[in-house]
Amino acid sequence: MSNEKGVRQVKDNVIKLKELLRKAHEGVPLDILKKELKEALSGLNPFEVVLAEQELLKEGFTPQEIFKVCDIHVEMLRDSLLKVSLPYEVPVGHPLHDLISENEELLKDLEKLSVLSQALKGFGKKDEILEEIYSILKSLRDFKKHYRKLQALVFPYLERRGITAVPRVLWSKEDQAMLYLRNLLNEIEGLKASKDFSITALDEVVNKIAFLTREFTDIVFRESKILFPAIQLLFSEGEWVAIKESESDIGFYKVRPEAGVWKPSAEPIYPYQIRPEVSEEVLSKLPAEFRAVVESRGEFLDVYNPAEVKGRIKIGDGYLTLEELESLINALPVEISFIDANDRFVFYSKNKDKIFVRTKVEVGRPVEFCHPPRSVHIVKKIVEEFKAGKRDSADFWINMGGRLIYIKYLPVRSSEGKYLGTLEVVQDITDIKKIEGEKRLLD
Image (cartoon, rainbow, N blue to C red; front, side, top):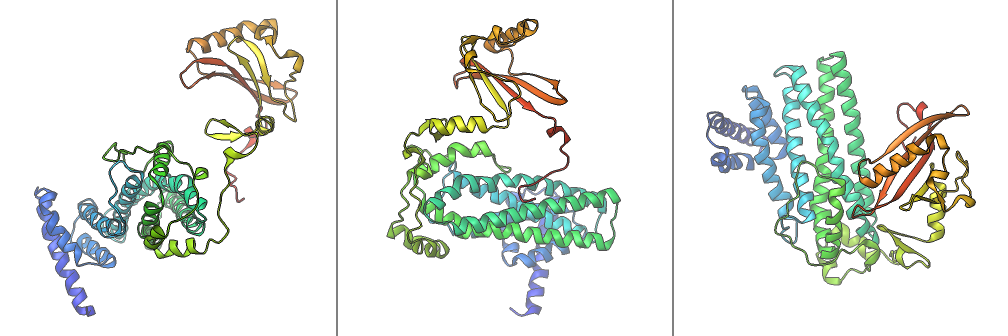
């Protein structure tokens, strides 16, 4: 298509969009107009959609009115990006369905940002538009839940199969996008505080929003075209069941997981339980990026199983030897002591730098004899309230030798709520109280 024809088509589609938006403004339900809106949008590439939105703003349409077009455009993007790419349909309730739905919500917000940033160039009140942009950007911080689910729940299954390059690249890009988002939020906070709404300052914000949008969209594309089709082929039902078990622990971005059609019958399978082989049939269907990695894995296959290490016992969701457990407890930056359900002192940690000295001789001692007579009645009252379920913690702090010592009592209960005992945690918080600002892992 020649440039002249392209410009004319954009103008024709903008005219059509304006007519349809006027109808929507006059009260015609959007569902009735959806087919025509899709037809008007279908002739535009992503760049032309931005131009069309800019033209609509010039014509006096508000960003909020144009958001109606954004939602339909995202729906079209979902059809082209996701449904065509996946080997099989994803049932509602499946973890992959939740991930896809989150990407759809992200794309809606990115479209809105695009509209608002165009409005910032010369239409409407700058402070109000900037505030709306800031609000959407703040909500985008929650998208780290989507990335965290990939990093903690999906990538381990790929790594187990020797597929490490794709997860590492995606994780780097996810980190880069979230860091850029944080910096952009800080910059906008500075603009709001200084009320600097100069053309130069606002143009810089618009350019940075465009860059951020491209970064997020690129990750959506990589997930949709490469990651999601591959994991749908590679992962068994049991692996998806294990992912489903934990996804709510991390949370969701603007979606509520539904019970839906997906009714798995398999038991959960965790990464350390699977064999890393990939069948020829699955290999032939994988996206090229994954197929190349799988074919070049060689001997780099992860067959380590923590449950099979000699002396390991299952503790919670993990596995430790008694030596590891004891050493782990003693390495904690807090001292712990445990009083059992019989009100007997039965355990204490052996930290390198002790605050309160405990001895082997005291093990088995009644709790009332472990405290000075003047305070034992308080301790007994706290323990009784723990037993009765009337209290969930008790804390206090004292000065000792110029150091501030924080002491916390916590009831220990079984998964059924049965009282098992009381945990005492002791920590020197003198230096912690001096901490200011932030220090990240890379600092």
